[in-house]
Length: 111
Length: 114
Figure 1 (cartoon, chains in turn red, cyan):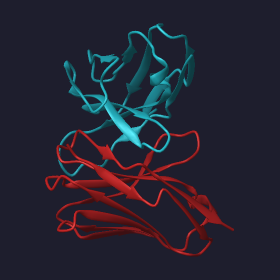
Figure 2 (cartoon, one colour):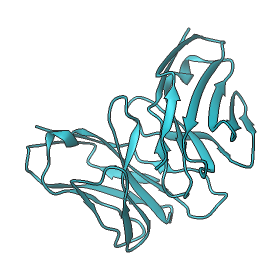
Figure 3 (tube, chains in turn orange, purple):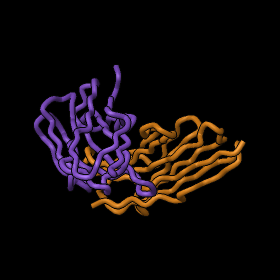
């Protein structure tokens, strides 16, 4: 089955700096890659996703890049703000109804 | 439109007890899933359903049962709770078909088995 590795497990940045979280996947058939943000005491919330026919997608301060050949994808957050502090999860799906998640990254943005 | 509603939010069980975690969605989503979240391990799929009357196992199904008698509800049953089932449980749902966005998650049930 699919295996998703996520790095780093914790990331601390200064407010205004950029943050990058990286994930690798094992199943070359995976074609859908969402990113979720989880705030304390809440369920994960979809923040951006990308499909395998696209190399990059942006939404204001966040962007996701996908390298199908290397089987890795990354989340980029620019101009970080304290409210960006949360746990971020990447995931991969080949069948559309099953998501395999990475282990999560705790992002801390220091004011 | 309440989204995905999970009850209870917190539960303490004794080893060997049984209970049902409830999940309901009002978005007419075909797909529903149950995940457990353990520290440092992300979310792992327990069971999922692609529609009423259809369920299948995920990555960690042992010790859990599910059923899907309606589109709206997808309860998760623990038949004989064990301390290893102490976790946070999330229910999620999504529309079927390509071009549709990712899952919508509930706010979770924190279960402690003593």
